[in-house]
Image (tube, rainbow, N blue to C red):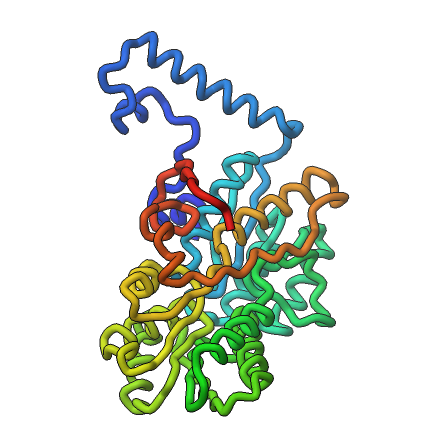
Length: 367
């Protein structure tokens, strides 16, 4: 997907340097005098010049992001983060890869980026070996490579420069501890969209390890749901209908988590003592948590996975490789009925539910 098409897909993410006509179309100059309009445009020009002088003049570097599920709603805020960082730094980007977690398609996109002389490449390293060759090829050509959202295991032969994303095993382990606090005994299920892929398998492994360490008499089923939202939702519902003795339903990816939340609500499972939860901030999941039908979801800040990756790419390029490569953990935050309110009251590009740039005011204590 080109940068321009991607911007359409995430609802007009770029509004940089609007013309007077564009401002008038958006209603910003209604009733304004010509003098006021000139003042406004002069102010915008001054801000743009100030941003451009933070770094020396540089080429409009093109950064290619290779993704495993390019149309998945989880990555809408990631694309906003990419677009915002590129706008600030005067760069461009391409969003490409696979819609269905096909590593072969991703490798093809990776190789195309090398052939197209990308200035830097970021890839979700969802396979432990498939990206080793392309990474080596890119680095040999002088193209820096970063991992985002999914990373190879420690000790891997992949020579990517840095990883920007959640510590996936620790996140899964934290979820497993939470499950053991919610469920005393019995069967729980943990759904996973694509078993074995490195963006989510470490979470499942961590969750199972934490449950086992708890010493509780809990058995764990792990069920594959698929790479698209509709099949994930269907697989979750089908599992519950065939296993109505389950004490908890959880998931390690956003689509399956929405499926868990919808099944919890549809079948009234909280009243039956069943617990549920998972990962990510899909709007339907947040709504159902707020309604009290699901226990939690975990925020991994997808916006930052795009924004920080561009920042590292840019710093590598502008500093000649002296600055940039650094692993960044984008965090782990449990979102519950008690804390979900701000996510629902605001619509922002940081969570991917609005395309409008804005400052979100914060009130009250932090913590």
